[in-house]
Image 1 (tube, helix red, strand yellow):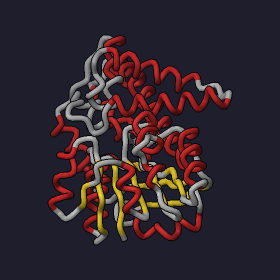
Image 2 (cartoon, rainbow, N blue to C red):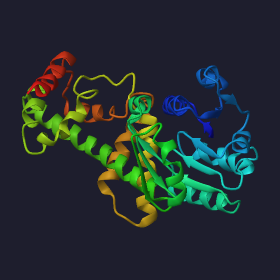
Image 3 (cartoon, one colour):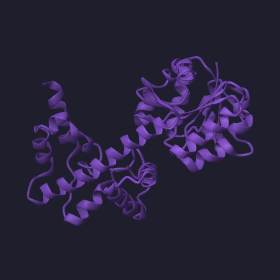
Image 4 (cartoon, rainbow, N blue to C red):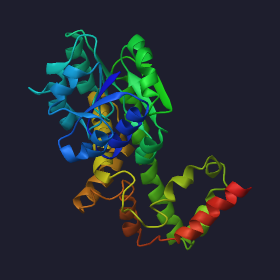
Amino acid sequence: MKVGFIGLGTMGAFMAANIQKAGHALVVHDIRREAGANRLAAGAVWADTPKAVAEQCEVIFTSLPGPKEVEPVVFGDEGILAGARKGAAYFDLSTNSQALVKRFAAALAEKGAFGFDAPVSGGPKGAETGKLAIWVGGDKAVFDKYKPLLDSFGDQAAYIGPTGSATVAKLVHNMAGYAIQTAMAEVFSMGVKAGMDPLDLWKAIRQGSLGRRRTFDRVTEQFLIDKYDPPAFSLKLAHKDVSLAVQMGRDLGVPMRFCNLTLEEMNEAMNRGWEALDSRVPMKLQLERAGVSIACDPAAVQAVLDADKAK
């Protein structure tokens, strides 16, 4: 089938490549033509606008930073809506706002087309290897039709419910992760200030009931070794996700005290100029406040992980 893909950044480039490897004809667009060079070299067709993508394809994907980028790509004069054919399906793979995904789905429905929120989880590594969760909200029958296509770049494509449901699931997922991260920074700063070596502390708490679920292994790649560049997922993008989650809480009248604190931590880190660093970099703020430092030897950390695998 002919597939359109808009947004060939870190995530989008990998997902588009996997769709192409599965044998589908690809039409691509990005604000930077050079971002599509590899796909064009592999046989993809370039389109000058999102409208031109939609005019040629029965299914269209976007992988964009967030709502402010999705809005013009869908609703602009040269946007997807202007070119969408009757019966076409549009899947937005971005982490978006529930209000916007409902709005574009309704607008597409007026043209006899289908809109889906389909945020992904798995990071760049998952996008490259095809180990991605894809949460999809929209028409179930159309989802079923295109699930084999989704399976070409994600190993866990799941129908969540009506339009907007997948966005809620993604925001809850991401908000939980960053709230836990904030708590992790607090408890580690306390433990290190109380006199423990950070590596010994981490090894010890991994053996407790919470640690046996490997909750604490999320701190190994950046926090324990004090390495936030290059980012696995940038603070700028994480800040957008948390802002969307907190705004959803406000819209629904749900108190989210700890989540708002998490956003404040991110705001402070953004104001330090850390937006291009890894999304766990706000954890350094707590270490500063506590007057401690954590910078374990990466090889020592890996040795602990390898020892578990050998058991």
